[in-house]
Image (cartoon, rainbow, N blue to C red):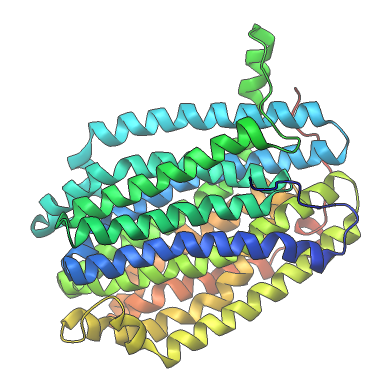
Amino acid sequence: MLDNRDSIDFGKADIPRLFRSIFIPTLLGMLFNMAFIITDGIFVGHGVGAYGLASINLIAPIMTMINGTGMMFGIGVTVVAAIHLAKGNLKAARINITQSFLGGAMVGAMLAVICYSLPNTILRLVGTSPALFEETKVYYLWFLPTCLLLLVQTLGMFVIRLDGSPVFAMVSNIVPAIVNIIMDYVLIFPCGMGLKGAALATDIGQACGVALVMYYMLFHTKQLHFYRLKGTLTSLRLTLRNIGYMIQVGFSGFLGELAMSVLMMTGNIMFGLYLGDDGVAAYSVACYLFPLIYMTYTAIAQSAQPILSYNYGANNPDRVRKTLRYSLSVALLIGVLFMLLMMLLPRTIVGIFINPDEMSHTLASRGLPLFSIGFIFMAVNLVVIGYLQSIEHSHAATVFTMLRGIVFMISAYLLLPLAFGERGLWLAVPTAEIFTVGSMLFVPRAKIFAPDNKTTTEV
């Protein structure tokens, strides 16, 4: 049996050592999770073709939006629960955990009804061309269970790490990845199921991840287990109030995933408009790689979050500032390494997904070095936004996320191709990241980066 009694003291342990104890298993779990996404792309690219990759890329924004819903509840509840834990109120933390799963289940049910009721409308909204429509619809319908299961798993990962069990959280990501990789190969190649097989393989893997999360929450928690909620009107009112506050605190996390969807959807439309389906296929390589970088930065922000929130709740600003500085340093170092890799080996990286004799390979090889310019700036943006979430500066986090992922992103995609053509398409994302960093510099540090203790949720 996995041991969930990891020794973690958020209030007293050495910051770098404490951060690494959470970051390493969190990153490994996310990388394995990313491994099955990349493997899925490799199998589809070579087993179905470049247009199969394009179909998956068209559906990816839907997955990121639903994952963002899980992050919204996960960030919200861990910020609130960590503050309660710092104040010694374990009962309140348990109640908040239970309320977050309840709220996530209700939202997930509503999303399921919408997604299954309007498939054709949704596919047209994400920019599916007539040539790709039928194949993309097959993948969409079979892939939806993964999206809805992912909501529960994403929320669970936040709670498990806050409970002091980052290793169990890592395993809950690794097991689905391994299962998905095995089933991907079996269903795409020997069984010849194409995109349907790729979707079904991911469904099976994700179901394993949710099973592990629920096993932990029901039988293996350290202290943050479910708490029986009262059935009174007062309890219902407080539950709705608390769920609303969690959504407010974690809303920028949802916007961050929505920004990923905007990036993919807007990019798909603009690449298709300027370069056709070959352009969409080329852009799909960037969209397979972008989540790898995004997940790494997210792992940094999520690893810092319980440390930040706990010490914020304990009124220990020195540890809050030290955690922010350390997490920023790690993110910047990793950003430089990612950028150099993409600039030095673009053809090799693109060749993993697309055969060199296809036009989309040439397009992606030209564009990837330009696309990678934004990685360093994205490191700053995601870590700072994660910090603001952790200390209940939800409004500032939401504003910066909105600027980064929607306002600047859409504007760049609309304007840069007019001025620079194909190069402008690849430079849109870096431009949005650079402008977001610039906007942060205009805000007084004392106003944004000084923790100001607020009143957390009632129970």
